[in-house]
Image 1: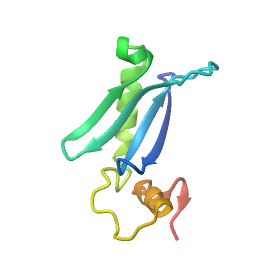
Image 2 (image 1 turned 90 degrees about the vertical axis):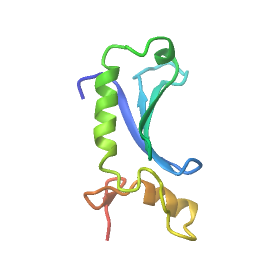
Image 3 (image 1 turned 90 degrees about the horizontal axis):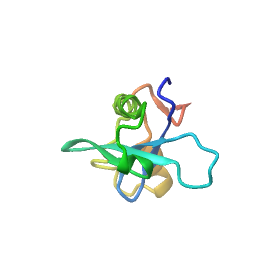
Image 4 (image 1 turned 60 degrees about the vertical axis):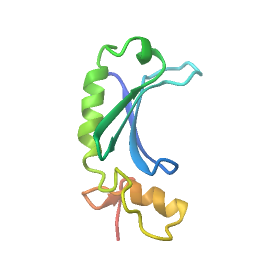
Length: 110
């Protein structure tokens, strides 16, 4: 990571998708979220927040977005399409974070 941002990947249960949250490192108590990256059937979407709304050309932000886009491709169910019937909320969270290397949240599937 040379762009200076942190990237967190998580399942959004309400929107039923996997998201990459791009955060600016900060010791401030305010929300450090500057961008949200996710994929739909129409392609990859980037939404800007906080300081990036006024200045989407923050130094390093383009590189962080590119890294997030590339990494999202490894999440098998990132679009949330056709979730298993009867799946629980915890199960949906795990399903959304299943990766192509047969791990979920860094833990090997068994």
